[in-house]
Image (cartoon, one colour):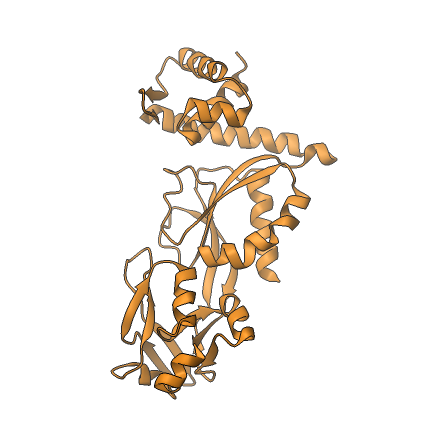
Length: 298
């Protein structure tokens, strides 16, 4: 038994949740993958996986071993990538999770450049605004806006997203243009709420002008938990909304949105790439993080 082959097979079964799916991604037969994992369990004298007719799940010992295997495989990848030339380029699968607007408006359109540089890296991208269990779902990294509450994660700040307040022209024609942020409270004006995954509730936004500072929530007829839906609600004229500049750029250029309160400022939203503290930052994760920093810097 080749121990590295066995560890790769075991890790892929854990991630795929299936011997059959793992075999497909490894371009091996299901029998070969099963035999490798069985030989590994025999060598270690411990059960790594629970098998039923319906699913495969990792045992407690298997989960601990899986985390160690990831580090070993990442170090092996680094050793291979240290070689010069194209043969030393990072390769393999990278599992990431990205907010839906950032994926659709920024990162996915820029991916041809990434794949031109690193043609052997396969990216499995989860696109959501939910809180992802990085370790439990075997995700290599997440890209998230806002302050990180999970202090156990390792993180790299990649950008400060500038924010503005926007509304659709049809909305402003119907209700008038608010002259002051306080106009959004206790009036006919409406705001669109964004349900933050960490709280499940819309949060007030702080606006600053000189020595004035106001926290505004407004009256909401709609609150959503997805960034693309949030933008669509504002364009549809359902209320005033707070947007990162990158989300507002296209609708602002087309006239679908206009900016209000231009003499007021909002605190920038930090953007992070976060990954598990016990995860070795292998070559493919490292180049992906550097690429995200580069893209956001543009």
